[in-house]
Length: 520
Image (tube, rainbow, N blue to C red; front, top):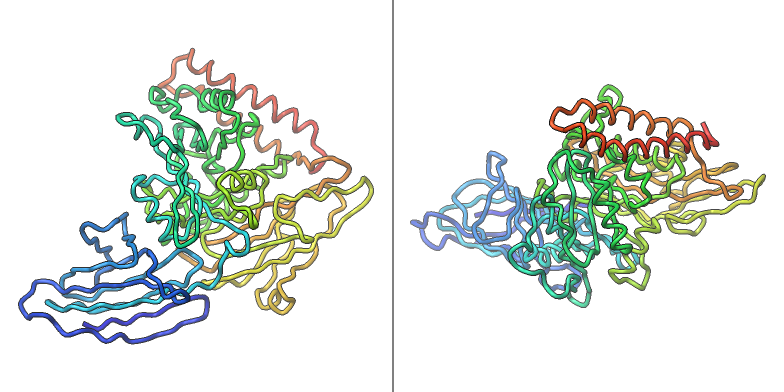
């Protein structure tokens, strides 16, 4: 059996040949390969994720090893008992390590052990940035290993979801927040996150003391707002995340003032492909935003429209591993906690918008020395120039960095120009209130792989920028949604009237905001 491996990170490619041990017998039905993953710096075993494919490109599953869709997760060593043939593999330890790719030929009766060195190329936590995945559906018992293998620091696990309640037959543990200790690092798992995913879209609930029963709700009724308002009133400390920006109830949720983050790096972006539609949400125009990147761009455009209406809501990220194909932590949000990382501080700074969302590039941005979420206050009649600087670490080709101001790309910066200027980007001039962020998109043609900072805000004369076009966009959205409810045959008139009171109230809110607009 010969095994060839390579470690890739950006333009770095190292190829080495590993010598196989001779076959144990000539009559065995399978060969065996044991892979040990070791941190190249510490020389200690580390958990990892492996994707194995046969000669037809189909995922291979090995019994009794933690598996989801197309990958296994293991605690530093995995034993592969496979039929003879040609196999390819990819090994990862989260996005801060190089991907280890290669192939091997398995012969009947072969037996071999190989050590794979996993090489870190950036340490976000050492720079104060701690990763979390806001959308996890994996079994609670598996999550500590998954966190270690993906180098993930915060993992709220969804254990109640529509009619499902994993704690229905047994009580949850006394401590809902559990520490996962890992070689001197403390990670946090919470076992009582929840999801309300129905006709209007999906809301994710975090940090509740107990399950909130929504099991009697059906697809259309009652409104997601009924539960949102009830939960927010009873549990003021709850964190509510809008799972995707194109869900139909987004304008109602925003108008309620009860939501705290929104998933622009969401589960329609997967590791090796895109979900190229908007499911049952608000559709994009595919002529303007074609596949494969169109859905990802649409999520961002809708988020920018929300920001353009004066709302300050942090971007977030989630992978939906356990429902969709993604590994845990593929889409992740990094929250800056500096040297004071705790679970509570992580959520506090998430709300402040001190974040970067990513499923690829590792970005650490500052603007005029401040973190994302900062509000630059300027006196009426004065202006300000904002200059961004960032550290950027890549394992995939990126040609441009982009600066987005008030929803429009105002600077395309070639990567070589960014490097020549020592990581500094062109300044952005503000004479009026608004916002800006930094975006980095890879050249991956299979999926939308990107990173984005949270927004930096400018407030001139203590006034937020409110766009007439963006507020009117949400008025039209609610009109379209109201017409769909009126025509829904599965709802009684009484149910329609009950649902419409939320949309009527939200539409009045957006219309009043439109009248107060101070920008095009």
